[in-house]
Image 1 (cartoon, rainbow, N blue to C red):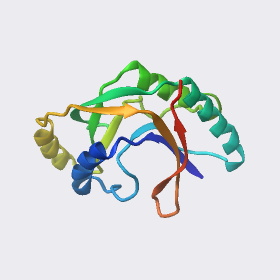
Image 2 (cartoon, rainbow, N blue to C red):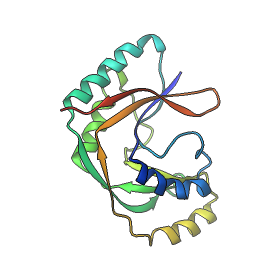
Image 3 (cartoon, helix red, strand yellow):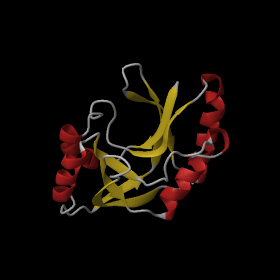
Length: 169
């Protein structure tokens, strides 16, 4: 089964991200706006208890923190993705490293760049046009990170929460 680990921001930020995602993200209906802590991965359900114990330990050792969405950016030309950039800070980078360790360690396909996707799978000329307009938008949104979620993918491609882990460090 395919799993992932993500942070869902509060409703106000989800509403802002969704105002773009409705137009520019074909995955709009499959998952709410989120910061991916661990990219989707295949995992044997027989090992799920060990994985959830690992995530519980990470959540107990990690204190809640705040981070900032500070601009619109893109991964083009690597991928045609538009996103709200999360200002990197030690807390979110450490959380990512801890989640992607032990029972859940695997080599990453890409460098971890915390973000909320607002557009993807766009043609190159369209992404340039949209990014040209959106990069002028003044983005200064604070996210309080006090939990993360283990998700699993359903047969229709949508994602749902398997378990939530509250940060208590």
